[in-house]
Image (tube, rainbow, N blue to C red; front, side, top):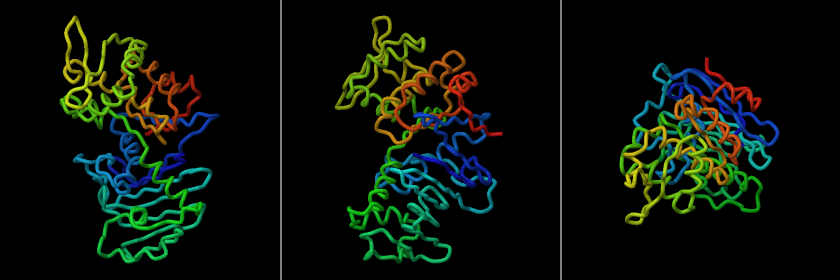
Amino acid sequence: MLKSISVRNFMGIQGLLRFDTKKSDDLELSVINGCPGSGKTSLCLAMLDPINHLSMYDNNRPMNGREIPYINIYSDQGLAEFRFEYDIDGCQVYYGYGKTNKNGVVWEELNINGEVMTRIDRRDSHIAEINLPGAETLRRNLETNQTISVVRYIKSNAVLDRNSKFTEIFLNFFEFNENVYFSSPAYLTHSARSENSYILSSNANYIHQNQLAEQLNKYLRDLGLNLCLFTQEEWGNATIKVKREGKTFSANFALTESQIMLIDFFVAIHKSEQCSLVIIDDVSKVAGVEFDRKISQYIINNCKSQIVLTDISKEVNKLNKIEPFTFK
């Protein structure tokens, strides 16, 4: 579980911002509200940011291909800084770092239950401190690779002691960050109209493989949208089709961007059982006044993981006794 995040000078966040997640009963739900441009999406992307430098796989990196200023434009420090607190299998994990861009790690530290597993601060030295069991013979001098994450370096190069609790938590920390799901109209709809749109193609494959077309149509009907959607395999990949008045159309032409995002919300909820954290951004913008309450309550009722929502109605907050974090 992500317990808190502190962010400084990242994207739309000027100065220092701290966000604590909420847990009530069995519901790990946090809500972020605020006016457009206040920093809600930047905070969501900050929660995803570790995977940019921890993942071995380019397609896991949330900011890949995005020409977005990484450092807040009003900052004169040239460094975005992040501090995370997690509860991983009952252990307290602290992870902090500073970066000049999405991959350029300047300083980094990982603690488990208050014990330093690794740290480096390249402003002082390129020598890393590494204390994980099994990494004793790993080279500490990282001068030849001046931006690599030392945490990723350890995972990629050390044969860690599998009998150690520290190793177990270290690997589960990676697994947590690799299984965060993000859905946002600000982040995705710029490509939604493309026939090879990532959001449509990945969702189509997921819906097709799990035979969820009927459930998808019911979900949309419950929201008041009578759409006849089905999936069809073409050249080894599934596509979403829309049947209308006896004719068949590709979803990227026949659906609005909001309808495409509602499909992404549906997939996020169904994937949530395999996710550590689901972040759904700008719910009201996608759902509109007509569907806001219904879609927000559907997400809350059906999500199987920790969840962060931004921009949902006051009515839903009141109904679920939620105290949202609000940007001023």
